[in-house]
Amino acid sequence: MLFSSNIRLLRNRKKRTQETVATELGISRSTLNSYESGIIVNPTVEALLKFADYYKVSVDTLLRIDLSTLSESKLREIELGYDAYVRGSKLRVLATTVDSKNRENIEAVPLKAKAGYRTGYSDPDYIGKLPVFQLPILFKERKYRMFQIQGDSMEPIPDKSWVIGEFLENWYNIKDGEAYIILTKDDGIVFKIACNQLKKKRSLLLKSLNPAYEPYEVNANDILEVWSFCNYISNEIPDAGMKENFLPAIHNLEKTLKDLKQQMQS
Image (cartoon, rainbow, N blue to C red):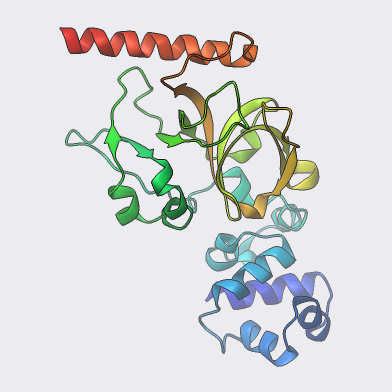
């Protein structure tokens, strides 16, 4: 397994002894040696997360990329926190569904499914059981998913609205001041305005539209998926003083609904 050779290589590059690393990880030196030598071939999820956090490298990278084959510049980039997992790579496989014509579905994640989505987001069986639909005006070559939100943190977007997001593979493309649906390890699905701090601090600063909620940071290692906000659906009329940056999305949604009604009537 690449895990053993990768953690050994990362430790040696940091010029740290097994005793030092084991102490900082809260494990015994003999246990660390067993990981590095491959005696323990199936590390626990807890152990994987410990090593990933310690070396600031994603679990996927530790398990699937042979770090010894990378150039010095690439290794330095990873050690500085610019893990390829953040930029997006072939390792980030999205579980998805298609219709009878092999078109990408838009899966809907209702409130009752939010808890399960945190663990089932990469499970094809779980994703395959979600409700699906098509929205003709969206780009066929892109991947979309719809999530039901809860609470008042993003008012004037009402509680229990449905937000549609486009899958974002390269997290460095997250734009300051724009809205995203983000799946995190601790909080599950959150809908927030993002400030991109990945290059400087390896984190995102997440803000709510409702000023009653304080901004907070989430580390890149705690992020599982990112979806760029496209539009939302609600049966409530928003307040007149809504944020200007959401007006284009609402106009787009109005056109979408109008087109759908015309199709249904024809």
